[in-house]
Picture 1 (cartoon, rainbow, N blue to C red):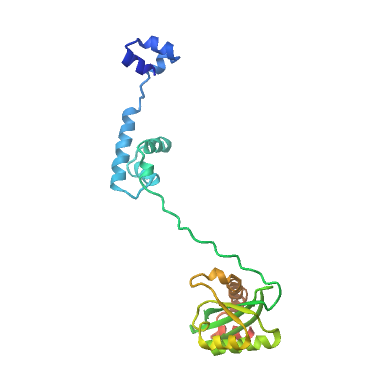
Picture 2: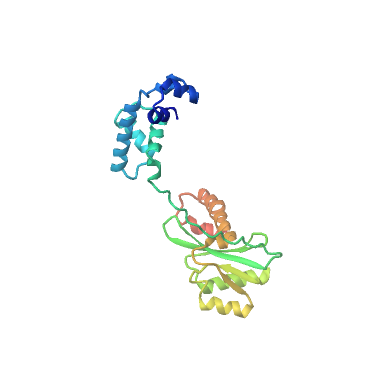
Length: 243
């Protein structure tokens, strides 16, 4: 305001400073680093034009470590913001994902079972599969079927064996694997009055109970057995027999 009064009204500096409560020393102050700040601004502008993907951190490291300038990072960042270079790179938009429905816990056993496959390899490199069946009520593992191949007929045989001692479930939650969408399993479910509930493709969290159980089987059973029989040929098959 004092500068405006001097420039536009033609009053003296002393009068303008007294009128607005400003010391003459403050009025006459000229930044000593003004020329150097312009140099920093020019360097930052040229650097960001050449390196459009660089943010402040890379620009400052380049000026300090490559060019050897001793400027403080706070000072460089202040000039960086005054030039609005911090606004030139738009932040990435976060994808909005729908939160999956919370898995309901059944009120009693045999209301809902979960079923899923696992895969692993033997010591000689041959691949084998595990079929895990879980009761969602208390996360009780009902059966683990292990073999080199587990087609739909083998899945049905495993379920029949579990039902003999456990009883029949109301619903079995599965993914969209070929064994679970087969006509063989569908006819078996209709015959026994069991509902096969398929999760949405690409949404394994909708079958989270058995997915968590799979991890337990892999790390708590498979890893312990691997350490016990480490180095033996076909040790994975022995693990299947132990289970």
